[in-house]
Image (cartoon, rainbow, N blue to C red):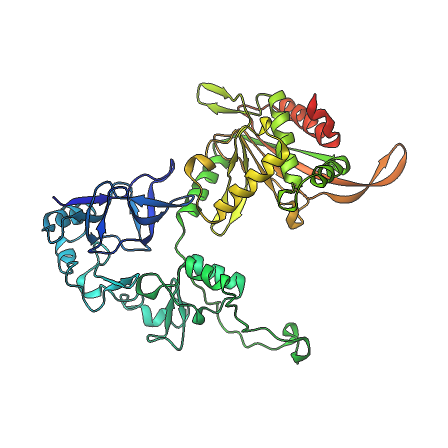
Length: 463
């Protein structure tokens, strides 16, 4: 008996997901618990497995499109089985026409069918009229010709050598290509309709296929760009990219934080010379690939200091305050689509070398979007460090339900007065964002005092 494949809840905060790619194509045999698709959630790319064996009879939501939790994205059953009734149900539930879906059965793909992994996949978006199925974004819109004069179509880049003059590129792939100097005309897309996606750019990077377009030698310049004349008329052309699920969730959570949460900020200046010497001593005893960073030391110190000031390691829960026995520290990691905070569990109980190893592993999986939900949720407080980018001081936004986040600036040589003399010390600014429902001004100040003392004299971590 044929059954619907529905979009599952793959992360705690997930409300909808984007089909990154279908691993199985229509007509493929599937075993129970076998991976059939990859789904981009708000925080990571997750594998979606089949709950039962059978044949993938129909893909309803194609790669690159979103589906809400519980929405039908495909149909599984026995080969040759009639699934028209399930198509009707799916179309009705999603406000689409069942007739439009039936006009393109899996066993008879049309000429405009999309290709996925070398197989023909005859499907279209639910609710899309049959006469527009398989057409490009521009071809479906009557105003496209006029807009084409002023802007680049969404997720498409002009390619004079291609059949229709365009390359279809995902927003992430376009950004990665731009950042790494990849000439998109040299990249073969493996996504639907030849769409260039993230893994194609990664493959190009691995094979060192970098573009040399726009690179000039020092002696080739004739006129400096700053002084060259340019004929600019009218407003700037622009392009738009679909907002990723991660970016949508980040926007929602930050809006939730900065509005309802009464936040105040405390900044302290810390002399880092002894902490830097402490780190140097640790690294002298470690292998090259085991070296610890300044941030690893800060994670350990913050965890130890928070246990001496329990309100910092707590969260506001309506009519209760939840105090945590261990410090689960969220470490902010920048990735292509925004920011994610992998969690170092029980950082107060771990050595700095162990913390360093875990942070490296978590950050690597975060950038590859392979973190599991339990690895990036449930921190008791977070640390965001922008010192490596030359930032001296900044404020960070609390990630609810945490009560605090620490914004770490860079340690820079600074002239200070010590014992009546001017000396140079490595000074670092730390700004603590506090949820005033839990942390009072004096509480936050006392925590920062302890935090400062431990960094300025690391042996105090043993007391």
